[in-house]
Length: 367
Image (tube, rainbow, N blue to C red):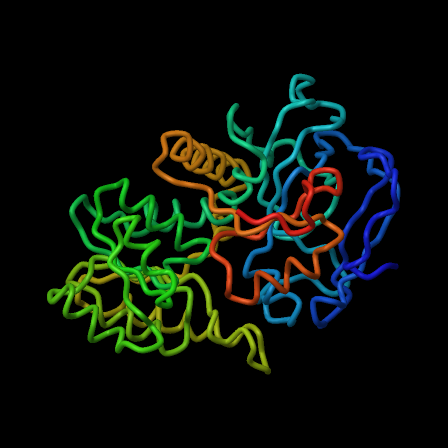
């Protein structure tokens, strides 16, 4: 195998060879490998999607450290989501789907030039929405939409606190919240404050300010919802900042990304606190959000809800309520550089991987 900083052979046609990025084990980004092979053939009910854009999310940052709580055994192809065009379809699939641009949430497998999907897991991307723009809103948009509208359900005029308001999920979440008529307080480093103010967010500097004290100044009666991806001590502070009847939505443990030991323990601690807090007679509610937990509804209901919610996010993009923030576009075979860039904390928006022939004139085209 090649390393994931190696350029593809010159003259390789887009649909003559499968190219995928392999995470072989716990490694630095430069340890990612490139594997080449034959383009897969779809089975009954399946489609093959020619990838046009796939993203680097926080999940991959955890996975390469072995810290994502339900990642598959090594080696595997990472890639939480993707957008692409349906190349071929298997038996039982509507023929009209071939040639359509679709998006899909896959958890793993997206970092590949061609991906086999169940046709039922593909959500059509509206006309006029570009592949990279749509990609920034798949896992981030679904997560933000469902946390805001299916869990917190804050009434118009309410106030929420979003940790990491400049991050992938946070950026979408604050825009959806503003479109819903909510007041938003967002934590971020100082260099992102002007961008947050432009979105109508009241920023709080988490490195130099006492976040709980500052939020209490801004919302003396407490906030109606907190969205916390940090875990650890932060989730306790978030619970204490809630107004009566407020809702905490925890959805990660980012502060433990570089820890050693059990990868499940940080999440189990949050789950334990959520269970305990929900037994208290104070009218507040707590959730640990995992988009895949919706599968408990049954496969068909899960797919229908995911499709409906992602369609709503795409419509918000078309209406201008949400913007697609692309930090950089890099070729798939430069996944190592893309992962390193995403982990640097120096960019705003999502780092997107594109096919070799879709990378543009620059290896790291930023916007």
